[in-house]
Image (cartoon, rainbow, N blue to C red; front, side, top):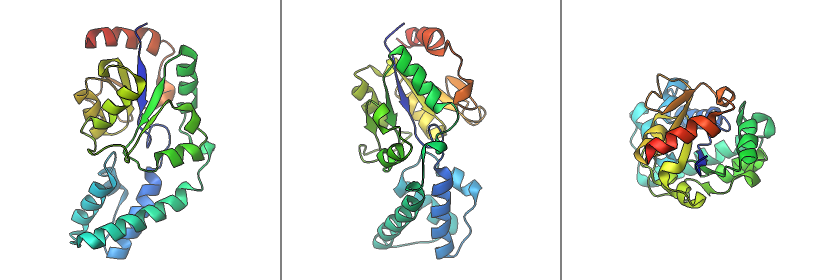
Length: 224
């Protein structure tokens, strides 16, 4: 098998913290006097915190000074962290732990590639922090997805070329970033939404046993 490594997005792949982001953003929208729905929250998937606030303000047609924006970014994160500190291993999404076990068994190293600045804390809360060979998060990058920076840094941490890396993503911006980096993209979620991915699965439990030993091995050859 070709030497390969894996890069995981966090939210929607390993854990589902989108619900907590939604509650924190909704609290801010309520404070500003407009409705923020779960459909609106989909627009924030895989997007940086700063850009998420901009989208939220566009939805509410609200203009704020830079000073106020910074103030709300801090208060939103504090609200979000209240939920995060209550998380435990039971919030790991189905199939995630088993997939990491399989990668360990095959000797395939993996890192995290997430827009979240709270990624290390979240992994610590769900008892997965020590399993990753490295973490690339919102504190490590200057450009948000769909820019491939987060995944290219992940490849460096794995000491692999981009085409040797497999990316697990649940967001359109993440799939676009992986494809732009010339990595193998795996869409986790609705295959129509993530149609640009090289492979699609509804969740991590659907990944077949021979996926890394046969399917991906052939795919990496074609990427070269």
